[in-house]
Length: 161
Length: 234
Image 1: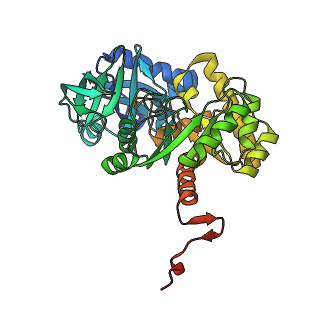
Image 2 (image 1 turned 135 degrees about the vertical axis):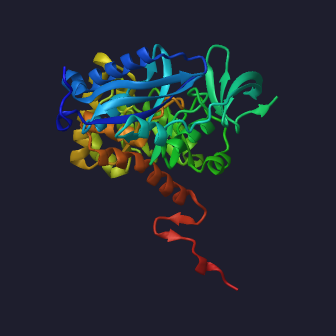
Image 3 (image 1 turned 90 degrees about the vertical axis):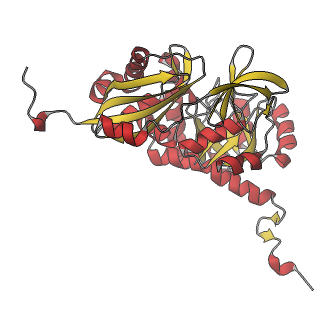
């Protein structure tokens, strides 16, 4: 079908989103898309989520951190922000989610708001709670592997082994 | 704006990690409100200096009945800047709002708890802040979430009518459960609270901390009486 004349084309806004999980989390685009739509439907209802759109257009997630760009209709950014804030786990792994900014184009969103986070990480032995543990350390933060879970810590919390 | 958090061992992340993430998210401070049975060990000044965020020492008292709660309030009041009481039953809610030594009634609508006009008036009189706990909206779904939103709306109407003091929190137990203030404001709008109401509730923690620090400081003697610089005699 012939594309719409420019004044009838939808006005999109792109939400730049940062994701964070425990180091063992593995999340793919499909799962994130599903959670976005579920969250929209649960909070905003069918009409609200139709108005907001919430299509994931960019997604990456590796080693516990990731980023995404979600497309939203102009004027529906605040309901979309609320819906996305309600995503607390994806495929059973808890995630931290934060909207860093809103742009009119995907490229501006990526350039202005994403990709600043340092990706380097290392595994180190640390002393946490008087026991030696393995931790994934990234930019001053550490996810310490306990017996059956992780604990979030920082450089201030442990003594290097 | 401040957020009130449960840190390791009450939650999964340490105070430092929560403070670091909260600073990233644009909060001005965190209130550590671990339950009385799971105290965290931390250095507020060190964390505050490292991440540029205020760290407030608090406690959330969990008690089975008012008698037990009363004992705990006496124990924790002198050493903590913010003392909250976990509500959740009518007896405890009633006790909390009638006790000026308590700063915050946390989660009044949880469990079998309820709030009415009598409690709201008592809260105004004693300056007890009623907490709006958004964790149920953020982290549950289905019927339970519907009931949580219903009870928050009811609480909102009562608090609004009597202009009772309130605080708002997402009640995070790990850095992953923290949400930025703008997100909480947007969420508030969706469930029927204005963004000013949510912003005010988040800022109230900070005002409370500032007031209590002033009251607990050395120079404060009693309301209206303070040790000033004119006292020095040569």
